[in-house]
Image (cartoon, rainbow, N blue to C red; front, side, top):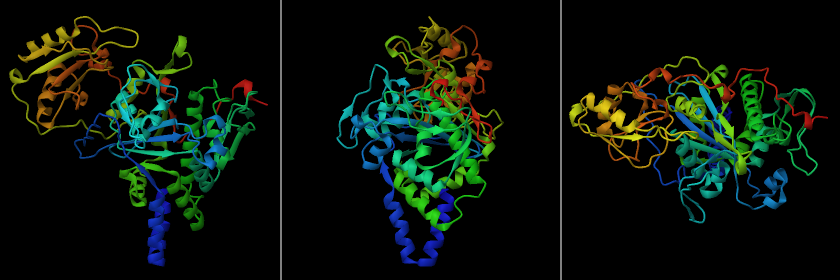
Length: 489
């Protein structure tokens, strides 16, 4: 879409001279910008692979702000008018380093996680890092989209390069500009409850092309799909986005210059982006990268999750092991569609020191949501390092956050070779060696994947997307939402 818009703008500028240039400047002025990161932790550097390629991660945020007449009309819920906005849709879009595939991971808005320190960009109020879990959609009100980015990074360890945020009115204007997008339901559906809840979506069984306000209703529907939770809503969003991509790639829409200009106006007015995407030219360059991926290499997923219990009943938590598996695959640029990638193991030009001279602190990070740390793991792994000649290996007994998989952390480029030497000595994949501003020297964090004695179980590290992620391929035209029997007519 952005590519086509930019092409029309280029013709306008060539054909109308100064007028076209000023229109281009006008569109740039439409785009709202905010800082990428407002947390107190620095985003990790994005490394290139051996071929000099880097992946690209973009956090897509849907805001439920009722801060304008248009958003209030579309969002309803008068008691929330002017209230703190919530990040009710959160999707991480991962474009592979070789540009062969796209993976999207949705995080349900009800996900409970520990919030990082954030600062409100408007008021300057500082929100301290929390010790108790908070619903992830509250991140937007604690520090804008930058805080949502920081919360994702805190949980996943995934380097995030950009964000794009859109509100209710933006969805409607862009859906109108794009035109009808086919969606499917397996029964008549009416998303409405006796006490006024629901999106208002009303569709008959089968396939219907939706746009405008009806598209917004589809994307917001919770009551009526699957189990009436945010998990069903995420699945419906995936189906809509995949269908929209297929429609646009047919080349039958947006061929009229006037409609393209309408989309340009709608898109630039709807988006809030980080400063790395704050011009039409930058958005065009991004579109050039994204369009290289064929539809059948787009994979939509939801973070594997489990429901809480007791007073957290109905809330969502990352599923131990399987959520980290998805995050690890994104971090390591492994396609979620299971097809081979052209990725290569990162290498370093830093030469390692003699192993006897490399200080290594070993931490026991083996605890999980259901299990405490495995006793003696730091000492046992320290002994393995000592046997391998690392005379300066020691135990770090401080309290540490749990890690789903074992990793070697280092603070600066001059220690990368030493860190890789530690990994190789223990059979830990070099891809699990990461730069971190949270350490001052080389730290080996023994994760939940190495709770038992013996050599590192490298074979236990799978490169398969868990079934609980609900992967949906972009070329799947048979996907159809299951309607909850209580919301049919």
